Image 1: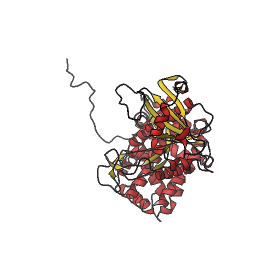
Image 2 (image 1 turned 60 degrees about the vertical axis):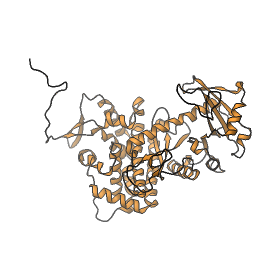
Image 3 (image 1 turned 45 degrees about the horizontal axis):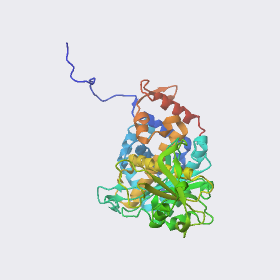
Image 4 (image 1 turned 180 degrees about the vertical axis):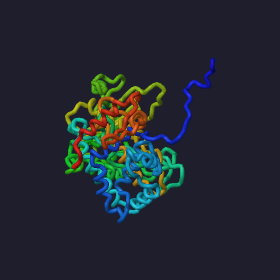
Amino acid sequence: MKKSTGSYPRARVEGGGRGVVSQAGAVLLVETVRKTGLDSVMSDALAPWRRARTVHDPGRILLDVALAVALGGDCLSDVAMLRAEPAVFGPVASDPTVSRLIDTLATSGKRALTAIRRARAQVREHVWALAGDAAPDQGGQVIVDLDGVLVIAHSDKQDAAATWKRTFGHHPIMVFVDHGSGGAGEPVAGLLRAGNAGSNTAADHITATQMSLAQLPKRYRRGRRTLIRTDSGGGTHEFVNWLAARGRWLSYSVGMTITDAIHQAVLQVPATAWTPAVEPGGEVRDGAWVAEIGGDCLQGWPKGMRLIVRKERPHPGAQLRFTDADGMRLTCFATNTPGTAIAGLELRHRQRARCEDRIRDARSTGLRNLPLHGFAQNQIWLEIVQLALDLLAWMPMLALTGRTRRWEPKKLRLRLFSAAAQLITTGRRRYLRLAAHWPWTDVISAAADRLHALPNPG
């Protein structure tokens, strides 16, 4: 009887294989780029930066880096994974060419950023039209979430500084469009800031909101159909006044700090005025109640603002804060949505927690660190990260259904993009033949069929 030398099968490794394609599932992202017209639009946008007699198009180079980031890359040189698979990604620029383009765009400042952002906005409107019922505006409202992100720096990069959490790095504001419970979300703005930037700086919140509104179709750039949600960092007079300004009329749901006046008003709320909080399915949320307060707490704030407080039993082991009352954890937010039950408004604001999921996705898609030294270079990198996140949001919205639409980037990479395939050429056509035993081959094939069925751009 021959003894086994281990619990796993043994296989010898050698090079020289042909006709095998790694990262074959990434063809879904490539087809998303083609069907949405992102490649041609980005090429036109960056045409001013294309030098005479150059081989590689600047827009294509930027998209190649975004594809590499979407597949898990975290630096410019990771574009090599695309270069190794020309059958899927075509010709890819060299590392020095990529680096030179980033430096050139960074030197151009706002001009290059504006060109990239306008291209993204143009394609976004087209994607939402292609998505139909799966588009984030099908409910009659677009929900835009703002939140700050701490990006740790492990070296002395430009404008890296000590953060409010006693770390060192940068503190950008990220803005996402919420796709609801049936999908993920897509980025619409990324404002890079120094590490010591404040969490409640109204001017930065206004700038980030302006950037995000410019990414939306024109009909959503003002009016009640666009809801701006933030945590308590957005609960400042200047920002709320800007949202509610005449001619802008945006809806808002912003967290508020529990001040002494709000704390005293909560203590005066009678027991009969508290309404049970609800869950998304309509059932009562155990141990949580909501109430609306007014009076002096609303003085100095825009007309029509409503102040809603939630009290909830803290989780076991949680410590109470001095702003809590009667053993209950207090939270507060302001909104200008009229005529809706406060329990529904509180649920809508609580669902802002999905923004934390989007930030987790961003961290796993190039935002774990900023790989370049210069601030302007890292702002270009932030645009590349948003392009990658756009693709990771648009592909499921256009090609996936059911639970697969909610898969986060890590799961998409593990189950779909990492699939290998055999490259077959027959009848003057090339086919990627996926392994029949791969558990998610049917998902990849069905998604590819849905993308192929979409009309070609133009």
